Structure formats: C-alpha cells, structure tokens
Length: 398
Ligand code: KG4
Ligand code: ZN
Image (cartoon, rainbow, N blue to C red; front, side, top):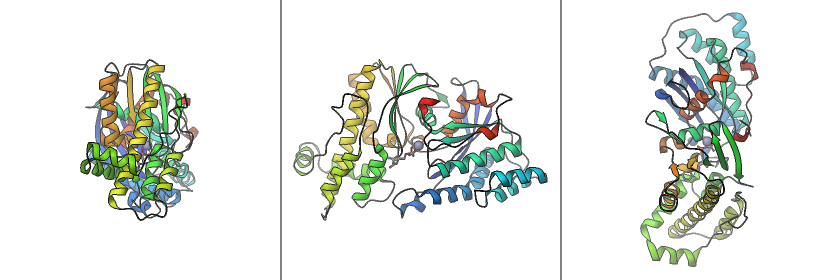
C-alpha cells in the first residue's frame, strides 16, 4: 500500500511517500520519498511559532513538498489533464480559507497524471488549529482530485510509532507499554495496553516540557527553538566543569526545584521551574559560565522529574516497554539518563528511543499512524468530508 502522508500541525511542512507491505503492525515500510520544510527561520524573530504565519507558509509550501516527495519516489509524471469545472468549483470552495492554495493544487493536478497512491494520511490533531486545517483541507482536495481515501490521524500516535520504528519495521513491542510523550505542546504519560488502546495516566498541569525549554532559552537570550540551544549550553558546562566542580558550582550558584516529585500522582508541572529561572536571571548581566550553569541545572531538573515520574508509572502499571517520543526526546542528556537508569535498575523493561531524525515533527510518522488506521479509512462508507482538524485531539480518545 502506497501512503502519501502530510504533516502541518506546527512549524514543519512535511510530506512523505511510504510504501507499506503487509498489515499493521508487522508490515515492512519503505520510505520512497520524504520532503520537509522547516519554518523555524521564519518564526525565530517572534520567539515562537506565530500561527497565522505558519498557516500561510504551509499553504505556500505544501504543493512543492508534495511534488518533491512524489518525484523522489519516482511516482510523478508530467502530463496534461483536465479537471472538470464542477470539481474545480468544489476544490475552490474547500480551500477558500487557504489563500492561493486552490490555484496551486489545480495547476499541479492539471500538469501531472495521478500518482499511484492508495491512501492519503494527514495529521488532524493535536496542534495549532489553523495550521492543521491547511493540511487537512489539502489532503481532502487531493483525495477528491485523485479519488483516493483520506485518513485523519493523531500526531501523538505518530510520535509513538516513530519511536519504535527502525530498519523498515515497527518493533515487536511487549504490552503493557508506557509512552512518555514530550514535545512543545505535550507532556504526558500514556499507558498502551495494545496498539490503539491508549490511556492517559499523567500529564502536565501547565506548561509542556518543550515549552519550558523554549521559555528558559528565551530568558537566557537564546533563539527559538530553545531545546537544542539549552542542551548545547548544558553540555558545554558539563564538558568544561566536570564532576565535583560542576556539582559544587551548581549547588552554590543555582538550585532549581524538582516540581511535583512528591505529588503522589503521575502529573507534571513545569511553569514553576521556568519562573524559578526567571528569578535567577532577572536584572542580571550573566556571564557565559552562569548561563551554562542555569541551562545545565534546568536540564538536570527537567530530566530528573521526567525520569522519576516515569519510574513511578512503570512500577504502578507493571510496564514491559517504555517508549520516549516527541521533540524533546531528541535531547541527548535525557536519552542518556533514561538509557543508563533503565538499563541498570529495570533491565527487564525495553526502552525505545526514536531515531533522532524522527524525534521532531516529520511526515514518516504520519504515514505509520495512517497505516495503523488504514482499515477504517478504506471502508466504502468513510467520507472525506467528515475529517476535521482538532487542536486538542487526545490520544486517549482514539
Ligand atoms: O514534537 P515537536 O517537534 O513539535 C511539537 O509537536 O511540539 O517538539 C518540538 C519541541 C520544542 O519545544 C523544542 O524546543 C523541543 O521539542 N526540542 C528539544 C530538543 N529538540 C527539540 N528539547 C530539548 N532538547 C532537544 N535537543
Ligand atoms: Zn510533535
């Protein structure tokens, strides 16, 4: 089955062509084409993602990304064809709120023969709603023009599947599994009793951990997205001031709280941590060493809370597999901390970490989630018109 997948939930415009042979979850997946445009440079001057701009950029970039993914896959031929006036009107109506997109889609369709696609998978949530709608409406338009089924998928299910994807296969995950999903919009613990049976057992009560990384970076005068920047500074600190010196300096200079460690439940809170950093930096002209120390202590605090809560969930729910997913799981220190701890303390639990290239938002993960949901999408009664984008779509309701 050839799956065209589309991701526009935040600030990446991504399109892939993935070929699945076999049934989910034991299929072999070959990535035939993979195109991604990151809007990071555009949003940097705003210090975060600016939704109206994200929407406009997705609308401008979706067709070129689709062409690139299909060309990479050798699945696109130039050839003139006529779209009926009636269909044109339908596409224009569907895309009336996505400036310029209808014309681009229709030009593209009229200049190429229909590619061989069995299913179009598109992120339908969670994410920034205006950004999601561009992708969803674009997928619907292609579905109508190519007469191809469309499935709306959950972005977080994509992150989970990306984390267990390696060497063209999904791992043979033993259940119950636990997923710690950490991104710019989410921090949650999901218990997975089997594929597609998800239960949220813990979540942040305020900021997501990625958001905290981004805000702390801003307080330190670092550019967006802050996660990789904080990680870099923290690592410099660890490299420069190893062992005793490091702990001594941290203890004397800055000690941040470990929020919610004693709460008893599996919830998180990161806004207090960010506020503590604000107090530590406000009105000060920090030296490079001081900035590095704050980044390091912040990363230590975030990692410690994530680790302890995850350990608690592993114990309480008799977990056999632990899956880290979402943009923050690209963090090298966090990956090492989880690997070392679980290897030593819980060798019977299998830990899955995403390939760093698939940690942050991408469309390969959307193809995997689309394949997981393919059966329902292929039912004759499934109507494209029923797919809606939803900013706070939850994995627990899938
Ligand atoms: O999953 P993702 O790409 O987009 C969302 O769905 O939110 O995650 C983006 C988040 C941002 O907050 C970014 O700062 C964070 O992931 N991030 C990191 C790292 N790389 C990305 N956080 C910590 N360390 C990193 N290396
Ligand atoms: Zn994401």
